[in-house]
Length: 479
Image (cartoon, rainbow, N blue to C red):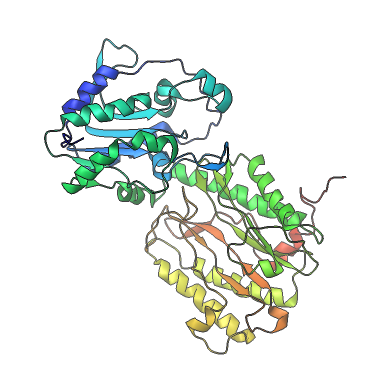
């Protein structure tokens, strides 16, 4: 390792010429017909290469497989930025971007040479492993189905590291995301030989992190991304409606949770966007409660923060509703304050508006409402924050808390989620205690203003109570 120097594209050319890549029959099947087109991902990779320039090389890698316990792993989910650039969902993959281009053997005809700017290293086809774990793309599948320019088995990446870095002779920039401490498993082993290189490049001020470049690209959503976020949000809104129609005294919080999970899967969502929050009464005032075991009682209010993730894009929707179908006087009062705050905030959102203005509008409405009810004695931020202790919302996208910016632009999506939480020890009158209300919707910034993508689930008190008179899919129990 002491002989390592700076990047040599000539060495990379030599290595890829030697190892090549064996073409294989494509057996992987993509059943979904509404995935983002490979051409969109390719355009994103080209934008990254234009940003880093011809004298640089970029490396991106997939998320690790995470172990749940013993020989059981958590359901795999791809790294946000890696997925954004490739649309590739398998683990143990590495993307190499070479703006200058390299000459390699053609995957179709190894007697010919082709020049490529991108190489995806993927898990090799393996009939035995695929019998147990499912089909793999393999190099040919990655090229033909995901539109990558060139692909190789990831086993060849290991030998590549030791080979072409040994030829380094002049300074070049290396872009690679910072290695996280929790990077484990096979992807960590694949990347291990890069660590000395990263250290040496860092000491020469030739190391860069491309994360900021990709995150900036992700702030404003493309039309394709907006369609997937609409789908995720429509599924989420429908799930809230079914939960409202299904809930009744005597059920458990987890039974309501089950309605959400069923509707998500029924409509094609691969995952929930986050652990579902279903909290009634004293649990409704816990912001990120997710035990979901309490029995539901007549007179309880239930706060449900549940949303679907569809093809990698997560929504985030919250509804608050009465277990018995009718809000009490005090529940109605608190609910209306939150709804007024949300409406005031949404009204400010348009291209060029500041997120801080939306937040200020919600703060003012909640402060005024709490003061009018006598729950706070002074119209101060400190007093208001006793009952509303979180921010107004956040961007959504590949991550439920996605990347964003302070000023709104067309194509951005933010949640607006004010809330009031009156705990048992809050000092409020007893009739208001254990009432937690949050209303959250996904708002798309349009050319002239905004549109509420989750409007399919009611927010008005009378509309919620009317909907809850119907029966939902979760109203039946096992005999």
